[in-house]
Amino acid sequence: MRLADVMDEVAAVAATVPSLAGRTYAWPAEEVSPPAAMVTYPAELDPLVAFQRGTDRWTAGLVVVVGRVWDRSTRDQMAGYVSGDGAESVIAALFAHDWQECAYCVPVRVTFDAIQVAGVEFMAALFELDIAGNGTED
Image 1 (cartoon, rainbow, N blue to C red):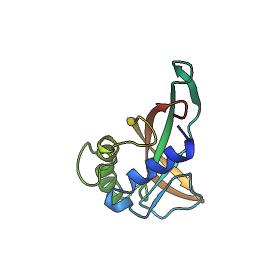
Image 2: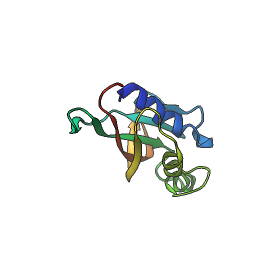
Image 3: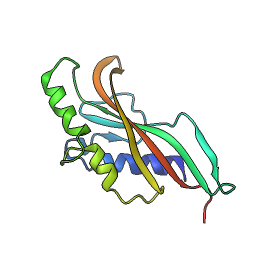
Image 4: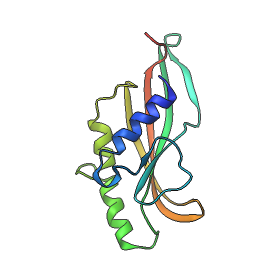
């Protein structure tokens, strides 16, 4: 797997959520206008998962930034992103996608936090993604 290619594909999948189309970044963007999604770098890569480089595996993230922490509309919009189904569900989009750059990319956890982007505080959903695929090129 190639890191940049997988990050691009994760961002492309997030962009299939209608309200995130055109507002999705395949890297941690310096500035965003919510709603927006950013793919984060993995904390670490495990290149020796199986079969002498047969499988690479890592945990990366997708941060979905919504709006002001205290707004009811933020809560309502966030609910769609973390729902298990529906057009605005990031989870459903990730599970439904036929992955090309990796074998799979599964959301295993979602946490919530107030984060700052360019000095502005936003409410965000932090999707933890379990990603695995070929460790060597064919």
